[in-house]
Image (tube, rainbow, N blue to C red; front, side, top):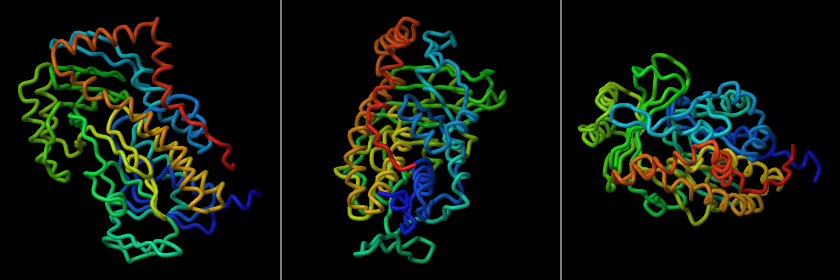
Length: 401
């Protein structure tokens, strides 16, 4: 196949979601000349969010081929070690930077901005809108929008997160695919009153954890992490007030710096709150629609979801290029190549809740002893290889340049 046959100039792809997976796919497809439209419910590109990391040679190759490895390094957090502390703030365990932050770490919003800026002149971004209906025809997909006029696309990719609207419309209700892992997680900005400088502190009581971290060296700002064990809760994902009340109730009597953290929670308008959960679908593709990133193989914490999404976007675009735009061939190859890789990364995320919020004091002490050993100089090389195993467990073919 010649270079021109790898071009996707005749392909018009609609991508739902402009967090990480969507802009990553847009960047990779644009490299092959495809026309790409990205639709995002939010009114603008979302900044902030947790820090995300990359590790191992697969992530390095993909980000290098995408042309953003150097820029990620230029904007990285340079995060140092994090410490587990007791109620008086005394360190109990040091968690090395490479354990928590990989080879390179960057804020989610910064990464999205890099990819958006690389594609804004050749990709159509539509903010403040979402898909309401998808109807497949012999030569494309008719798409209806909440605000915009109906349009036809060759392919539709759901890159719209754990609670994917695209997945719901095409593959069925979320309840069929979401596995709840008995914990919830929240994140929001707090004042840096502990004077942290690219460092983090974690405090656990049975079934609960409060963390405060400073990733960027800003003397005024830090970020809070709350994790708690719980039965499945019923709440409106768009009702921030209700989510704040849940958190205030669950953490009301907790020690250490929790009262200051809860005061910041009252005042914030930037709250992330969700179940620690995974998405397991039977298929990643159906007709002319495919799922990418968290929409198809999401894990809320600890499963290297950002790395998997970036690799998935690279593979999906590469397979479309290899197949000359034939979506049947490309979707089949994408699914077979990415499914096992994604499941391997999901496996390591199942322990995220119990790591942060062990259920008993005894389990907290056991966790601390284990990570004291894993964080030692003797075990650091072993632990690095262990964390990279899932991130590198995929064979990537030679996709067109």
